[in-house]
Amino acid sequence: MKLKTKDLLTLAELTPKEFTQLIDYSILLKKELKNGTKPLLKNKTLTMIFQKPSTRTRISFETGMYQLGGHAINLSSDEMQLSRGESIEDTAKTLSRYTDCIMARVYDHSLLEKLSKSSTVPVINGLSDSFHPCQILADFMTIKEKKGKIKGLKIAWIGDGNNVCNSMIYGCALSDVKLSIATPKGFEPNKMVLKESEKFIDIDLTVDPIIAIKNADVVVTDTYTSIHTNDPKRIKHFLPKYQINQTLMNHASHNAIFMHCLPAKRENEVTSSVIDGPQSVVWDEAENRLHTQKALLASIIHA
Ligand code: CP
Ligand code: NVA
Image 1 (cartoon, helix red, strand yellow):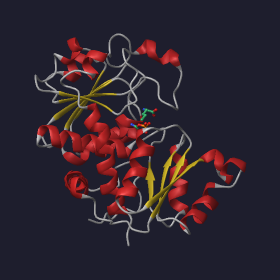
Image 2 (cartoon, helix red, strand yellow):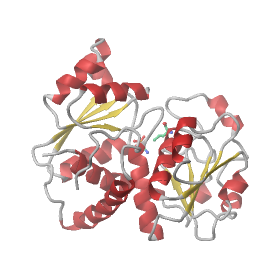
Image 3 (cartoon, protein in one colour):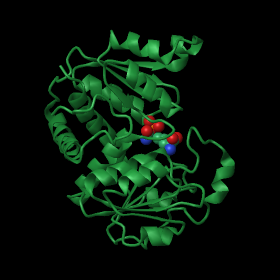
Image 4 (tube, protein in one colour):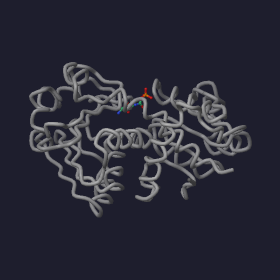
């Protein structure tokens, strides 16, 4: 499949049909991997720029390019002339002459927008302060695998209305999923993202995690401190009320699954008994970063 969008910065660039097709294509690539992936990206290169640390994103993109017959170049922004003041625009124009796609993990989302404007090759957001679209592709693939469907389910997001939550809202809007979000006051997701998405789906916003989680098919959380909001004082606004523990999970549907993008801060946003328990699908979710990003790369890099 070929995507119409040049870049994936938020997830909202995709149509509902493309989103569904990407998930189905990821499931197919996962099956095909057992017999070897076709070299769909032979001689293609992906340049990865990391301003912030990563385990899953780095390894899954690099492995994915390798499996597709291509190559990934990993750069921390400190190693580039960016660190000595070369503009992001000049960096984008230069990289576009060498590489077939750029994936960047940045602090400030506007940097990705600048990269996207000045580059002639696709730009993929590998996490910004505002969005994490690749994570949500993997999350919806995992939901489809575990639940056999996506449409009509209820997802509960409990905790910080952060970058992952913003992309989760777009994911729900693209796939007709009911979303309930419980955050403390002042930690709600982006208002513009909510407004745009409420045109397509019902989103309940509450401060009460018990209301949000009621009858949910999927329960999702993330850390209370992100790389760009790393103030430990934030945690007191969330604990103990928003912690996903077994007592809170018991308010969800009896066969609800638990998801977390990882890395997790155990005993903060989730207890070990839940993340290691029978309802948790976090390791499949992490693995699915590989399959969804392979589907994305093969669909966004045009011959
Ligand atoms: N979920 C995720 O993006 O993990 P990393 O920060 O390890 O890449
Ligand atoms: N919200 C987290 C996600 C990490 C994958 C962060 O931005 O640090």
